Image (cartoon, rainbow, N blue to C red; front, side, top):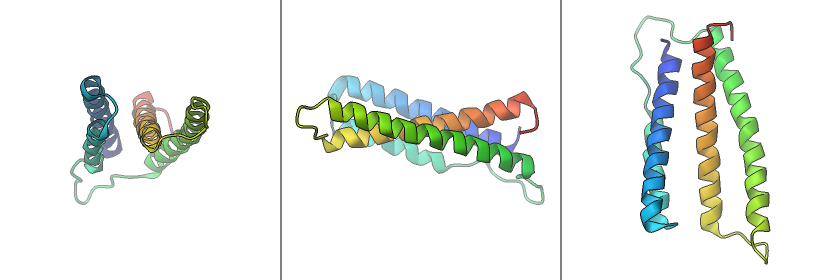
Length: 131
């Protein structure tokens, strides 16, 4: 298993733990600053597997897989940002969206992007085909 695939598995597990904690907390306190603070768990997304010295850990295939996964996830992010903005704006009579709702929407879109990127990286490596 390559370092990039290990990193994708770590990211996916952190995203799932964060979302599980968020939905558990939100079931008790509803929408509040406490429920938004759960996203601090996402700070662990910076962790990476330990690199081996003297070994090539990132080659052309890895770069191509990373590029395709990032491009696809960013396209999804922009589509989600537009969709969330339209949905949130149409739900209020004066067309003003509360700040907490905007923060929640962008956290949700960000997690979807990270999850899609991690899933695409894992699938690309599991498929075994040339990127």
